[in-house]
Amino acid sequence: MHENEKAQFVRIEDIAADDRTAQLGSTLAEVWERSVRATHDFLCEEDIIAMRPYVKDAVEHIESLAVAYAAHDVPLGFAGAAEGKLEMLFVDDIARGHGVGHALLAHAIEQFDVHRLDVNEQNPQARAFYEHEGWRAVYRSSVDDSDRPFPLVRMQRAQGVRAEVSSGAWYEAAVPRIEADLMRGRRLMRAYDDAYYAGEGCTELLRRVLGAFGFASTLTAGARVDYGYNVFIGDRCFFNYDCVFLDGAHITFGDDVWVGPRCSFVTPIHPLHGDDRPVCVDENGRTTHLAERTAPIHVGSRAWLATNVTVVGGVTIGEGAVIGAGSVVTRDIPANTFACGVPCRPIRAITEADRLDPSVYPGIRP
Image (cartoon, rainbow, N blue to C red):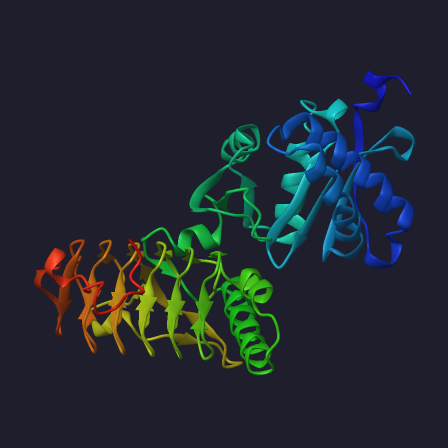
């Protein structure tokens, strides 16, 4: 087929799991390889070879798969999604610039309810494409989800009901799509608890539910989320038992953050006047009106929150800060500050005098 003819795509087709043959998997893996070789300069030949079998397996087993075809059923690109996340979108090199990527992304949003995705930091063309299509970067991870040294930029749609929830404006919380997200988060965290106590690997499961879960981080059992996809955890963080993340807005953690048991991070804000708070319920008992807004929370790298700390929406805790047990943090805390109380207030700066003596504890890193 002539190259110009091949580049003109004709249709997009959803491929059910039962219709994904081994031949289709091999063909789409070839499309992936041509796409990657044209755009992923940061991958070496060994990386591409190692990824080939995983790509073929992924397109055969991904939750939702759409393929863009040219005439004569020639695949030009494909998109795969699972649980609202775009896991893959690749366009054959010969079809780039012909609207295939735009069409596949629009299809994934409309048909698969896609609202989040990851893009390799070393692939600025891809990031520029998604930003042009109405997506925004919300977090950076130092490694990919297989802990390989390929940093990821986590992106979310800048439009839609989920963007409205995290915008800070008042919104209607009684929306079926949002309620479905709540149930998904609760279901996955319950599955996480079961896996945790069974001694099974849990990191992959956490990375399905959370926006980001960093390298060598630990989330102990009993954690609860509203949605999960608005929680972003950095590298080498530790969260003790029974932490709560009400993540209508983004809750972000830097690296090396310690969090004690039963700490809560609460972004929702409800109307102050009592007349604005009552919910409306229809004849079937379903909530039809609930006013709410949210504000983000950020915890800087190397911060430590002791047991039973509550952090409310709109708060930033600076790098290296320490929050005393039982505190309720309602305002920003400066970096390298010890703070405690209800409400939490800065007590003093953390200085060189607070360092452990290496002669007493020889395990101190230089």
